[in-house]
Length: 259
Image (tube, rainbow, N blue to C red; front, top):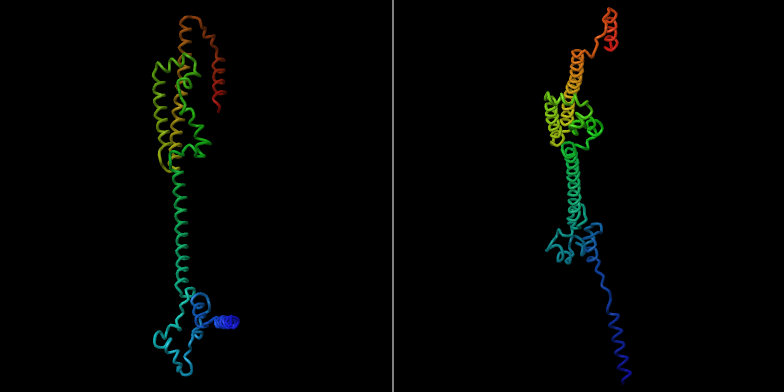
């Protein structure tokens, strides 16, 4: 009896195993695939309309509830699907962002270039200043009593100071130096800065010429005064005059005139 019971239980269990078959609904599979990636085909919808649209299952599933559902492409990745539209919108926004970024980078580069050209903090790095104007303005930027009066004889220096020409010259140099430092530190266009350098250098060269003329004139005055004193004291003989002496003097003047 026990063996019969075990046999019957085994048969029932085997029958139950064979009853568990896989159900494959092709309509459901087509629907799930068409919603994502498969090619759209409304003829793959089930149940079909049948001969003369008389299939009752078709009307129960589609006809009475949503007859246009199987005619509408609902794939997100279709040509007009929401995912395709979103991706197209993202691509358009990325293109717009890249365009704005390019414009901002161009504006930034232009702003930095203009800042470098106009900022007074970077004027000392200007190539034209480093190669030419810095050397030309070096005596003006570093002048002192030693550089101005040191190379001169003591009597010439004393005369320039006593006559007030030294104080006048240093006052003019201080004014030019202040204007030069203002042109270097002010925020302005590079062309305007270079033109300021040009004008200031021209003024400095004229002022230096006046100084050199006054130095030579002071030395000449001292020499003439010394010779007059020597003549009065009788310690200097003017020499014997002859007509030939005038000719020699004239020739000497012509030679040194540089004509």
